[in-house]
Image (cartoon, rainbow, N blue to C red):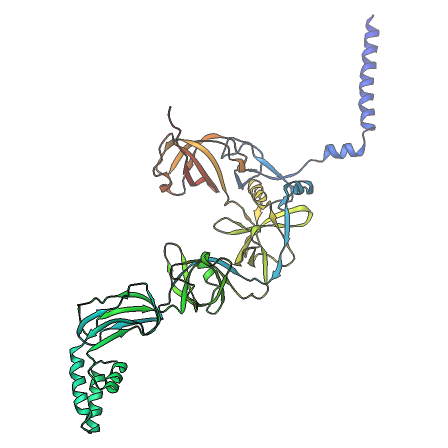
Length: 487
């Protein structure tokens, strides 16, 4: 082929390429051109481990060895919440509940113990010095009737007073007789013994000590042959016609109880029988160890079936309150420092919202601030949404604040092995933090409190819980795992 032919062929190829390019662009659809020219606009970039820190440009995170993640405008920015597809919510079994006004009727279940009624007590004392001549067959915890004899006591001082009265009785001097009778009473003789002397006209050297009430002998300190002094306690009788029920109620629940509220008790020894009563007192002193308050209930015991020391399952009911704003208790996420709910908004989005809690029953909790009637909250699957919000830097609507705040107080767990320890930090070879999408690696962690390092040493296997702060991850909890047994 000559030179002219080669030049002509090259020109034809160039014209064909140029025409093909023009033809291709000419036949391109407007939709394809728009898709090519339209790109997702990133509002900012962030590190999933530190979602509160925002960056204007993409690149590597200054905190960890990973790339920054973009957050796009079409995602709704910071306050739009989490968008979940409806099919995913069905697979997760996610349920919603409506914030509504309802009356709260508290029902507190607690344990109680039957005790003696300390208001129904009789103390038997020696009215004068004497000698015990006889003791009847009695012992502590015996149940006796009113007037049951306990002991016969000889009181010499009373014998002298009786002789004076009997000597003046036939004298006809009424004033002297009345004075002698008054002397017997002032000597400590009970009215029954004075009347017996008056009716029989004989000396009554022995005083039969009897129980003034029916009940149980709680204390018996009299023995045959002993000498008793004036004012000495001989016996203590506790009545059984009514019994106290002492109930230990948690402090937070006891604050809603009051005198007169109805109580229902079930005793294992009286299966199937419900004992009705009312609160007689909410005692003022709390138990420092169990953090409970004692509630006293007085129960009638006419048949003597209730016995001190028996245990009881107690149901304390409270009168229904006025209608209040409530949500199901399971909808609340409690982090220790604040309470959150996942608020369902339009277009399948969910926004973490801080709430203020009030009274709580077994199923519902009062919301005093943060929600309005008619709104919907997540009651199943909200913990997954909470973790997702933390990972994506979703901001939380705070109480009394028109500007959302970053949700950064969640705890994230992982397991690892201690490489080295410092005064206020540790170097740890840890596994992945699944809730942070963070792979396993070796890094240094500061601790929230140096006491967390107590008892630890290099080589220990531990489980940690970390929180996110402005300065990175901080260890909040440490749990020492069992050491492997060496073969």
